[in-house]
Image (tube, rainbow, N blue to C red; front, top):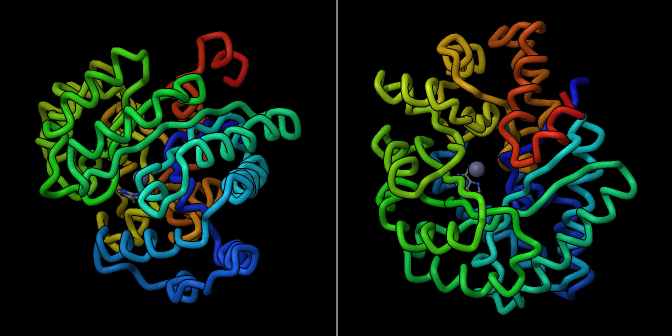
Length: 318
Ligand code: ES4
Ligand code: ZN
């Protein structure tokens, strides 16, 4: 197993059905109906169909200990998948709207990262994502709310429903985040077109693009991504589950991305919902013939190069 950096995982998307049941019992809450739907193997209708289930299942997460345990379960599973460094997305707005204090979210997850460093020798950090469907004012408020905990944060990202919420709406939020020294990434080109990817790069200053599949529709954009070595964090199992690629992993655009010389790497997105963790995704890609076994070293190296680790730490993992 190649040492890998996980750069595209939503911690809320690692909430497995068994942990949902445990947390519901612990907190005296009903088990959300959606927990039973997670075992499905047929694709979701689209991104929104999945997001509705994902947000509903979060009702069981209430305390700092809950967030610690969520992080710890993920990090133990990731260590077994060969992940040596994890830059983890978290959606604070999806928890504060239930009345969970943002410090419980951030401190619970951070304590899990500290434990993983001690237990598994893993490094990592948190990337706070703004829910684009709540708009730019709510995003700015969320940024202000997390900034007292600036030292716990690696960067900011943008996720949730893409179409209708173009990156340009969030210009001021990203400007403020950059002024705080936060790293910048954004989901773009998952359901939105290449124009969303251009905006994420040119207007938000995104240093990585999460997904980016639809960038392949624009030859100038492909050339730009290649020349600037802008990373794409690609999630093949997610794309099949959400119908943002074809139903057959063999036709996944990752092969084209690598042929085009793009810095693409494989990630898991929402592994509790999409059929597996990063090792499962890599195994499935090889089984489908999308990538050859000799490309696995390139994919793993791309993940490390694309991380926000300092150069010395990257070199130690390559
Ligand atoms: C997400 Cl797959 C995906 N796309 C956009 N936002 C998300 N949040 C969690 N998973
Ligand atoms: Zn994602």
